[in-house]
Length: 71
Image (cartoon, rainbow, N blue to C red; front, side):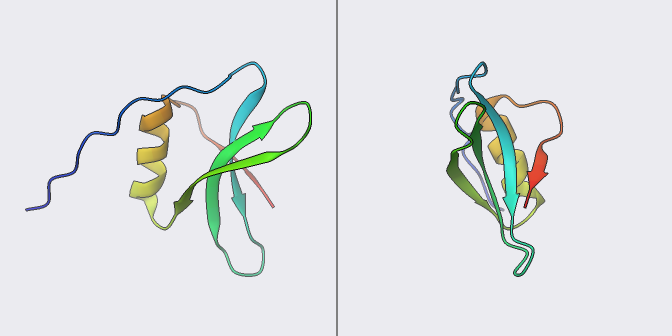
């Protein structure tokens, strides 16, 4: 039996940043993070290897909606 710690809830600036998944067209690698709405800078937070990684990212930051993918 595997026990996982419940991730500590973190926050982000919802007015200036939006959660996105940056995906590579060539390799398929996916990274979750935040895109600055003003500058377009991407802040990497977590590598997404499976659906559970994405769910943990969403739980950690309290994201309920679907996350946009950018390439």
